[in-house]
Image (cartoon, rainbow, N blue to C red):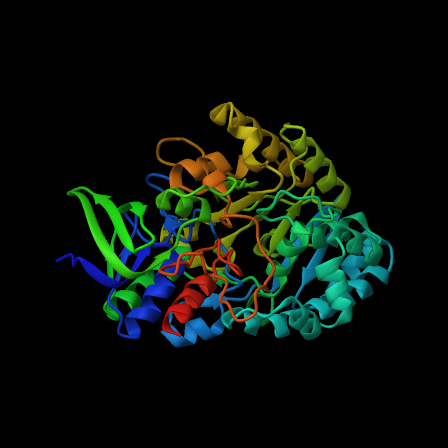
Length: 505
């Protein structure tokens, strides 16, 4: 039976809302979670995307870095996260740059082939030693009340503060590295899901870079066994077991500052009241629900292409096997100058002529996402994440622009392979190739993300008003617990944890 009053109503059943619900229910609070879709998980879901093809794809988000071990331990989250040995491979002509986490000598030799010497490999070691130190210091603070700017500066040290928090990351990378390829590999972490110029004084790219290198104190990007849906599913089980009530197919249509929540399901419209309301929705959506002035609509900037391959494509590089290259992040036309050219074209309203992108084969690390028949046949999943594809490019002609963007992106991929990727696509029982594409506009339509922005809005610095939790909204009864909170973004559970701690404290 639906109560009329709860201690906490959570609007949105994404992974952050589930984390908050689990903590609060375990603390004895009466919790109701309302989710518009027919399933929980938000963007952290696994889907059989192609009819008759036994493969579970992480359709939207696909790797885990920011999820703290403390949340995993606190909640008893039984999800296996596997480390990838190969960090990345970047094809360059007939060779490529392989970053092999299990063989430093091989990595050094690869740097020498691509950059013409040892200087960039040595610079790489120094730079990532610095980011590793920042990660070890900053990551624990993400689950605590906010530090002020000065305290954060003292914590990370003078060099790191200057190069990561004060100077545009593009300038820093240009100064530290000489190879266009190496510069591009570093800069991609500053641009994932973010439409930005790395040399811009606004430092949006710096904020994006920071969150990509500090995850759980290591910056490792790990593979969730069973796909992203395994993470959300386990969190939902924990929340339910603790007593939280989770309703799917329940769309929140209004929230009042007094804690009244109106939602609609197949039975009609209902009203419940929460002593506190946790909003696991983008800030722009919360403003609409409250009837207040909306924040500027954010703009996502990515093209996501999900595929199932009958086999891995051949490479031009005889020194690296396809299974090595594609089990890490495979960079495609992401040199520093290529990234800058694509950004300039997109800023002019043009689909980039040579779209930068990166691909990764989840099934090489976790074969369980494939059915037995596909595994035996050598099939693999492939996820492509395209950069500098802002929503503005798809507004006027969503279907036509998507088709043009996919065509241009596949052509970009094929330039660095020894054979067309299309020749490797698995075909389903209906004869169609197993490929689906999602633009920011598609994401907005399907998931309700304004502008299709995967972080809900531009990322913020992990410091702020000292003592606050970064989840406050200006209304005492209402807290943010989604990616749009300070220190939100990515699959982390951090905003959910912090909203719960703000409430409990």
